[in-house]
Image (cartoon, rainbow, N blue to C red; front, side, top):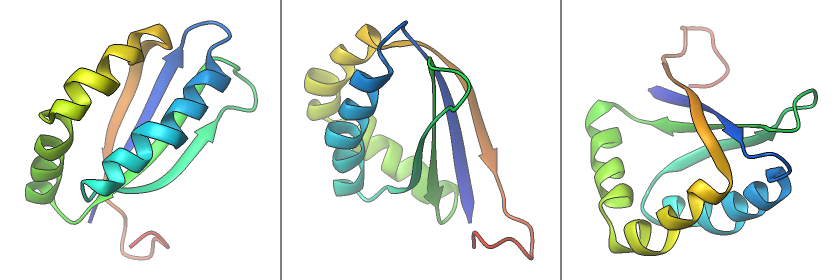
Length: 105
C-alpha cells in the first residue's frame, strides 16, 4: 500500500473556492478514474493551506491512475486551466508507506 500526502499553498482568500473545486470537481473526477481519495483537509491555523491524501495499491497502480487522470482531455482542457487561479504552489508531495501496525492499511 502506498499513500500520497499533498500540501498546497493557496492564493490569498481562495481557500473556500479551492475546497469547492476540489470536492465538487477534482476529487469526483479522480475517483471516477479509479483513484482512492482518503481525505481532504483545511489547515486550522493557516487559511492559505490545503492538504489531501490518496491511496494506491502499489507503484504500478499509481502510474496507471496518474496517466488516466493527468493525460485525459478532461484534465488538460477543463480542470488544469482553472488551478493556477487558486493555487500558489504545491509545497509538499510525500509518498508514505504505512507501518505494520498502522490503521491505514
